[in-house]
Structure formats: C-alpha cells, structure tokens
Amino acid sequence: MIFSNLLLLVGGIVVVVILSAFFSGMEIAYLSSDRLTMEISKEKKTLKGAILRMLFRNPDLYIATMLVGNNIVLVLYGLLMSALIDPGLRTLGLPAGLIIVLDSLIATFIIIIFGEYIPKRRFMLNANRAMQRNSFPILLFYIVLFPITLLATLITKLFSLVMGRGSSADITSKLTVVDLEQYLSENYEGEEGHLDTEVKIMQKAIDFSSVKARDCMVPRNELIACEVETSLENLKKIFVSTGISKVIVFKEGIDEVIGYIHAQEVFRGEGWQKRIKKAPYVPESMYGHKLMRQLMQSKRSLAVVIDEMGGTAGIITLEDLVEEIFGEIEDEHDKTKIVIHKVSNSVFIISGRAEIDEINESCGINLPEEDEYNTLAGLIISIHRSIPQKGETVIFDKFTFEILRSTSTRVELVKLTVSDD
View 1 (cartoon, one colour):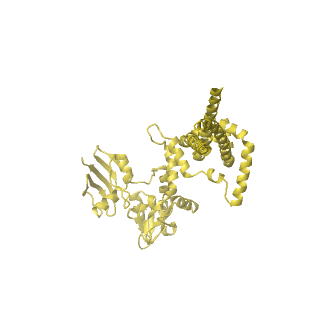
View 2 (tube, rainbow, N blue to C red; view 1 turned 180 degrees about the vertical axis):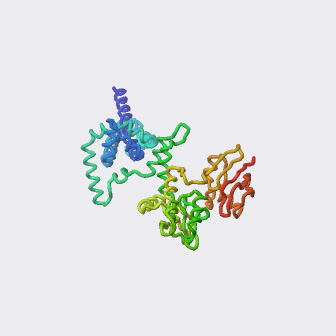
View 3 (cartoon, rainbow, N blue to C red; view 1 turned 90 degrees about the vertical axis):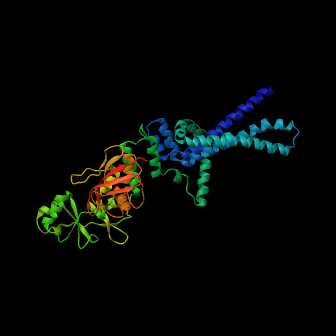
C-alpha cells in the first residue's frame, strides 16, 4: 500500500513537471517564433493553420492561458512534493522550520531545472516548430482554461488601462524587415548554400532601403556633358561617338548643370537648348527609394547629385536605381560594359568601373577594400596618386595593374596579374 502510494506521488510529480515544462516552453516559443513564418503557416487552409490564426489573433489570451496553466500545475507540484518529501524528513527528527526550508529548496531546484530552464531553452531554439507541432494540445488547454484565462485577461487589461500601458498585441503582431530577412535566409537556401534568383532580388529590395545616392551614382569624372552653347553638329558627334541616350548640359562648368538633352531631340533641328529637360538636384545622402519615388512622380529619369559644397558629385538615373535591385540591365545605349574576364588563374582583364567586392568574389582574390574607393579604378588611383595612362604599370603588394585603356579623367580597362605569395 505504501509503495503504491509512493508510485502514485512520483508519477503525479512527473506529470505536473512535464505540464509545467510544456506551458513554460510554449510561452517562450510564442514570443520567440518568427513572425513571418507564423503568418505564412496560419494562412494555410488547414486545421493547424486555423488554430494558429486563433492563437495569434489574441496574444493576451494566449499568454494568460500559458501562465494560468503553469500556475495551476505548480500548485499541484508543491502539494505533491510536500507529500513526498515531508514524511522522510520528519523521520530524521528535523525541526518543522528546517523541513519547510529543505522542502522548498528541493522542489524549487527540480522545477527550475526541468520545468523552466531546459524546456525554455529547447523551445526557444525551435520556436516555429514547437508552435506548429503543439497547436492541437494548446487548443485543448485553451478550451479547458478559457473561463479562468478570460477573467485574468480582463483584469490585466483593466490594470494596463489604469497604468497607461498597451497590450502585448502591440509587441507581437508587427512584422519587421528583420523578420523577412531571417525568413528568406532560413527557408530559401539552395542546395549549394546560394539563394535563388527571386530571393536574391527580394533581399536586394530589402537592402535597397539603406542605399544612398552616392552608392549608385555615376561619378563626376565619368560624366559625358556639353556646354549649353555647343553647336547642334558637335552635340550630334557626342551622341554618335559615345552611344549614350542622354547628355548632361551645363552652363559655365560642370558644377552648373542645367539639365539634360535626349538623343532624339537632336533630330528636331536647331534650337536644341529649348528642349533641355531640367534635372532635379539631390544630396549624396538621399536614400535611393525616396529618390526613385521622386523621379517617378516628376516623370524624370535622371537627377544631379550634389556634394556638401553644392558642387556636382555625379548623376544618377532611374536605371541605376533599378539595377540596385535587379542587377545589371542591358541597354542598347550602353557602350562600355563592366568586364571581369579570367585569362588564367593569375591573370584577369577587368573594367575600371568594376567594384572591388565583385572582383574579389568573381576572381577569388583579396584586393584591399577601403571607404575612400569602391572600384578598381579608385584603388589604382589611390595607389598611384594620379590617373595612370595607357601602358603604365602600377604595382601593389602581389598585384600588378597594367593599364590597357584610359582617358585623361578615368581608368577604363586593366590587366591584373596576381603573383604567387
């Protein structure tokens, strides 16, 4: 009889510890789950999706259910542990006060380890899976404990109103960019660890929110421009020789840009100056998404980027902004494409405008990256302290740069040779 009672007590304690672990774990799983994953799961037309929709519709009720359930089983746990431990401690002849202290210490240690710490840690690491797999038992406890949790929720909301605080729904219901980035990286990795093209575009769209005009503009020294008094014939020659679709027009110097002229306007006869389209001026620090909206609203495809001193830092086109999301766009007017050509394992032909990080990734090398430059031309100029001419060689560490094509204002094509360490 004594053995069977002892077995029942131990069995009851194991059950309530498991229940406490469940309630504690599901509370932290709810708070730690990825919002976007849960949004997608609950929109599925399944019973599990319907349950998740109900659970996430009212965060206060969910948290109250977990807390009420946990407190009920903790009360039962205390009673069962007292019934199990007290008789044994009394046989030792210990004082009543010491028995209470030892009883509390033993019971607290067990429940903290097995009912709180371990389950919360495991459920937090697998929060999404826990929410999806345990949706049915949660629903059961939701129904059983509903009267008590509803009362607890109403009292909590009343207290929150008195204290001037919002509900937990304010915290748990909002999706953020971080949630989207985490969801993409966790759920759409390819077999080789690379993201699919569609996902890459989505991630670039997310990153686009932090891109500024200076990051994607055509720099001042690469602008193709003409003075407002340029003759029609000379303007035609510029379009023919460069193959571009728009030419920047300035008044007395490149810092006084008044707009741009489109190639099609040169075929409409003299007086082309009257057909110059004004370009908006934007600071280097302007965010790309705001600039894109401004250009689209004003029906302009080009803006002049100005520096802190009010001078022309460069220009930026709608195409440049779109390419930040979708990558390089082929254009019938593009004359010079960015080239990164591998001749051998140690020799490469590279455009001056190619970005350093792209070169390092494509060629498997480690050109130095600094804040003062982004492109290969910028690196070479920072080393040489001037613009090297065709045929010149610039050596830096194990890298040898031979200039294949350049102008007085820019480095266009480079042969890069990497020597052995």
